[in-house]
Structure formats: structure tokens, C-alpha cells
Image (cartoon, rainbow, N blue to C red; front, side, top):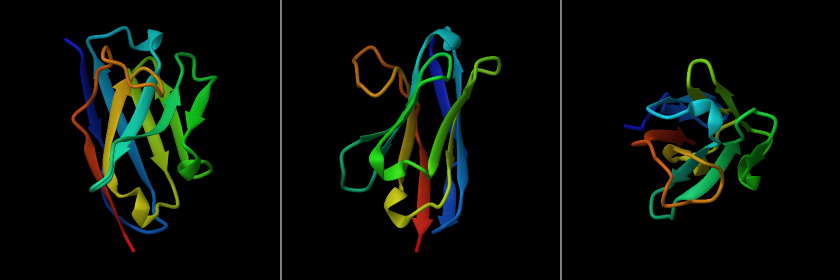
Length: 119
């Protein structure tokens, strides 16, 4: 059974940093791309970042480029999202999922972790 469990969310002031983690189990982690998405209050879920199997290809939505960094540890089955210089508009529930930027029916999703950025 595939499980993705996010952690690391919380309340932070604007300009602060957080690092989200996603622990994966029940799948060949090193063989799949991974992604982070978010859903802000009253908005649709949106792509944030993705990373391929070997970490040599990463993709980011424009609004987080230069501030967020996605990485992974294929030994520990973890994917990370380092978020720096956070802004109030980054407030959202953050989800990790299998696969890249595209949302496919075969993807697995975590339960999400709340990130709140105060001004």
C-alpha cells in the first residue's frame, strides 16, 4: 500500500523559512518522479515543484522560483521542499504526490500539511 506522509508545516512570519518533508512507502521510490502541490484558501490546487528520479531535472512554478528548492533522498525515501523568503500568498495546504507536474489518476497523494505565513 502506497503511503505519502507530509510533515514540517506550521506558522511562520513573512520572510521566514520552512522545510517540508514527505516520507514515502510502499512504492519503488527511486523509480518515480515526485512533486509538491498546494491549495490556498478559496483557490484550486496548483503545481509547486517537481523532481525526477535522479534529481537532475527540477521544475518550479514561477511564483516560487528562487525561493523554493525541491530535493530528494532515494535512500531514505524522502522528498523535501525547502521554502525560503516565505510570503503570505504562500499560505496553503501543501501536498506531495507521485509523478511530476501533470495530475494523473494513477498518482498517489499525501494528506497535506498546512503552511501559514503571517504578514
